[in-house]
Length: 183
Image 1: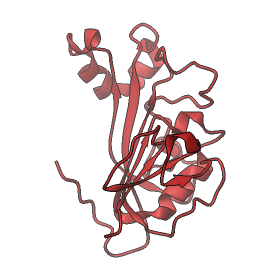
Image 2: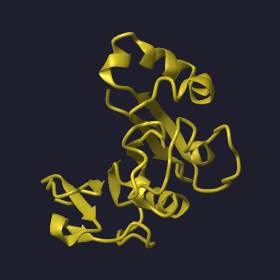
Image 3: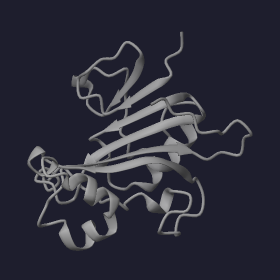
Image 4: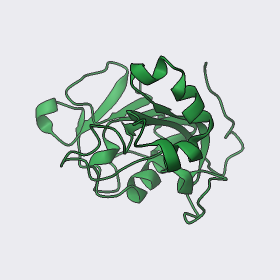
């Protein structure tokens, strides 16, 4: 049975139902590869689910990886990306090269606020900023996610976030590209 899930940056974890990719052979991934180097060693439309958990912030740039994720994800597939929010205590370490806020992926999203990326678009399934439990206790996370622009512009450093999570679906020229999300 062919594995339909790809885990980028496995950090030593193994998954029976997924192909793992990591830059470090010590982590014993299924595939050793540097995500800064494209193309990724996979065929087009190979995966139904792609997980990038705390790996994208280590890259030199985002555009090449996003084009590759678009290529290797199936039209009905989902790409999950989780990164430290730029205001997080863990975002500003020497190994992290990229910074992310609520609108960081808008250039890649169909109908996003920024329009400078013209190809390889994604459909936004969901996105959210996560916060420490001390802020969740007062339901601030709900308020800040509802009014993300105001949060990013005025409140970010008063109420720092922890992570940014986004779920995307590649938009490809096929008739079967319908949103299919399990809740």
